[in-house]
Length: 219
Image 1 (spheres, rainbow, N blue to C red):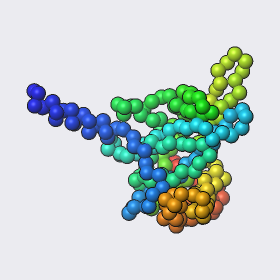
Image 2: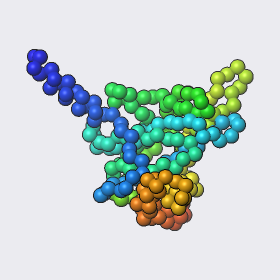
Image 3: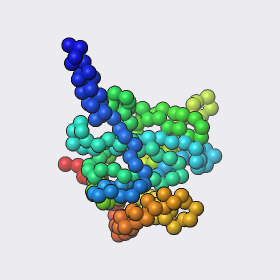
Image 4: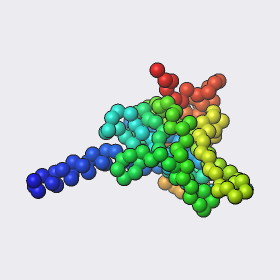
C-alpha cells in the first residue's frame, strides 16, 4: 500500500491544482490567440475616495473541473488589463486552499479589513463571453464604506458598475497609459502591444445605443 501512497498524493495534488485559481498576467505582450479583460476599482469612504484598499474576485471558466479559474486583484483608482484564455466565464467568490468557493468576501479599505457576504447581484450575473484576441471591459468594482450609525460597526457594500460610461472610461485609461512618458516602459509597451484590440473595444462601446450585451442572455 505504501508504494501507491505517492501516486495517490500526486493525483490528489493534481486534482486540487485544477480547482485553485491563478492570478492572471497583468498586461504583457499578447500571445497567439490570448484574450484580455479590463477591470477597475473605486473605493469610497465617508471622507471621499481613497487609494488604500483591495479585494479579489474569481473568474470561473465553464467546461468542468479543468476549466480555467482566475483570481482578479481589484485595486483602487487603477484600471488593470489581465490576460486570460478565451472562453465563457462567471464572476464568483474566491476559493480556499481546498478549491471551495468562499461565501464571504474579504475587503480591505482605508487600512482596515472587512468580511461581507459575496454580493448576489455579482454572483448571479450571466456568463461573460470572452473571445480570442479581444479585450473585454468588465467595469468598475465599487467599494463603499458607509458611515456607521451610533453604536454600530461600519458597513461595507460592493457593487459592479458596468455602465457604458464606466466601461469606456477604463478602456480609455489603459490607452492613455501608452502616451504617458511617466509610466514604466514595460507597462507602456504592454499597452502599445494591445493598442489595436483596445481601439476596437473602444469603438464598439461608443457605437452602442443601448446597454452593452456584455453578458449572455439566459435560456
